[in-house]
Length: 120
Image (cartoon, rainbow, N blue to C red; front, side):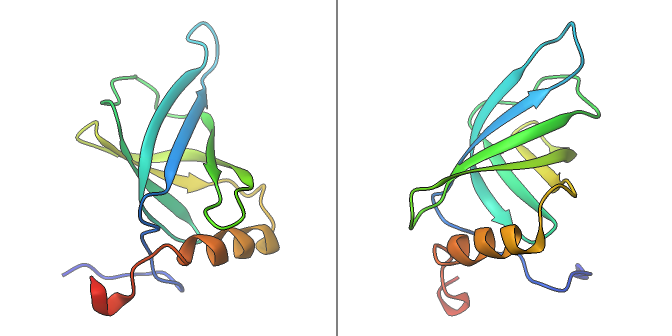
């Protein structure tokens, strides 16, 4: 049984597309990957990738671009790769660059897409 060690639960904002841009140090250059958000929380986000992640990147700064579902406002989240599962799913940890208010706004709008717990 998995123990959740977080203050707030993960949720799945169904159908939320994500655009990931990884900026490793030269000479590799920028890596761009698209996917769908599997789940998210206040500490990170898990994304199912449209193509396998076959890059040898252990630590790199990255940006995850989302378009908020209700307002249509584009959002850029900064973070780092936390883990890669079977090259088709990545977990990302948010960087400390975001204020609590920014995270609250993001979570508030994205949680509206999540199915009610009784529907899962």
